[in-house]
Image 1 (tube, rainbow, N blue to C red):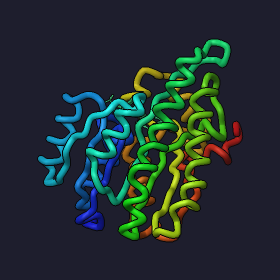
Image 2: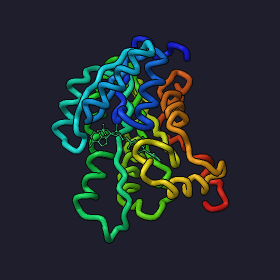
Image 3: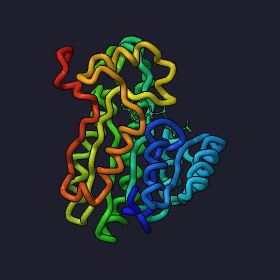
Image 4: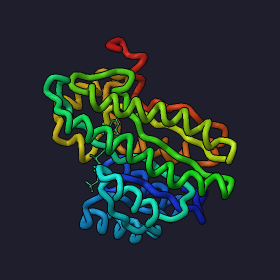
Length: 247
Ligand SMILES: NC(=O)c1ccc[n+]([C@@H]2O[C@H](COP(=O)([O-])OP(=O)(O)OC[C@H]3O[C@@H](n4cnc5c(N)ncnc54)[C@H](OP(=O)(O)O)[C@@H]3O)[C@@H](O)[C@H]2O)c1
């Protein structure tokens, strides 16, 4: 891969697993200094070690994104970043009548409030420096809800609205904001879904689930100079879900 992120600092939230892990590795391979975020210290240490062994540069930053004060501490600890990837997310599938207020609030806190607080803390610095990119990871469930995705989809719909608002709010300062909306993807988080995940893959035109690397490639593209005129929109990386007969 080309070193097009040389001298850039990239913070990837939820980089200890799945899509975030794949994105962290790809950014590092493109020359970025990667701030690997997660909660689990051991997993964080392993990810940093694997990036370092591959010749990249990374350090681990821990924070619980369900805790607003911890999110603000994370932003302060990260310092100036050129690219913020709001990737960390939770998805607890349950019907609306089976979803507690706590579960709803947790989706909103981790999936929407944490990106909100991180962007509020880090985008002004990008504006001052005249450049920067925020990539927000959404989900196909916003457009195509699967059973049990009401709270999750609502939290990610908020992320898509924020993507459009922030593009306008920070655009004059040279900051781009891009959403990436994955379809069903094989990750640590979806491993327990088994046949349900394969069923979601079957509902795409490509009749399969994505690999985390395929989503990460689009995240890296969205943050790259090749995407210099893309902002305020959400890129579907969903195997053609909207065009599928089942759509
Ligand atoms: N996989 C899919 O099919 C799919 C489809 C559409 C969209 N997405 C979206 O893509 C993103 C990544 O999904 P994934 O499947 O790759 O996830 P995953 O394998 O479950 O990994 C989740 C990551 O988020 C971190 N995380 C979770 N809760 C956190 C919290 N409270 N505080 C800090 N970190 C937290 C985890 O860190 P630790 O465990 O180390 O704390 C981990 O690094 C999510 O936003 C998800 O909604 C996924």
